[in-house]
Image (cartoon, rainbow, N blue to C red):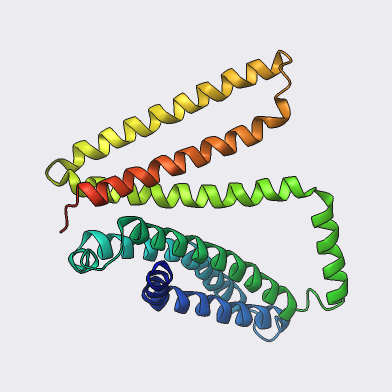
Length: 251
């Protein structure tokens, strides 16, 4: 059932996200060709470049905004009454939205990189570079760091994306619970969030001092920070899940 829910999520969010990505790729082609024939279109380079930069921002911010708006409308708005009649658990509802969001983030990052490559390719910046040379360069970059580094980087990127997404999910869900006192809730949420950040910072500083005294955990400090990130992700997930399951307050 989780797969069917994710399929529905991709279809619903893709109605806006896909046109944004398509417009960005189209503008990257136009920008590349404009740069290639700069002499013929000297006055258009500026505004074409501005449009292309705006399209990158629209994909990065727009996809996130679409996902957040869909979550709020689908689970906390009028559609929430229908969603709660489905024979699925709250975990499946929440996980389908979280996994879909993570997939969209990866897709957006890949498409932004592809659009930049198209600009360089079509503008003849890569005219003297063979694809074999690019592949060799990529292999050298990947081999510069060991597998542990790339695993840490991937886990960190996924954890950070999940943390930001769940932070907004939790904020939307809990603010519905405190509908009559939303301003007070948001003030309390900011204060608690800052306090938790300070607490985590103090804990890291304590561990850092222990490491400086020769406890032998210096190499494990980055992984300690990663574990704290995933603990925060789990805490936000179960906070959002509990609010959805036990304190539903639909508009």
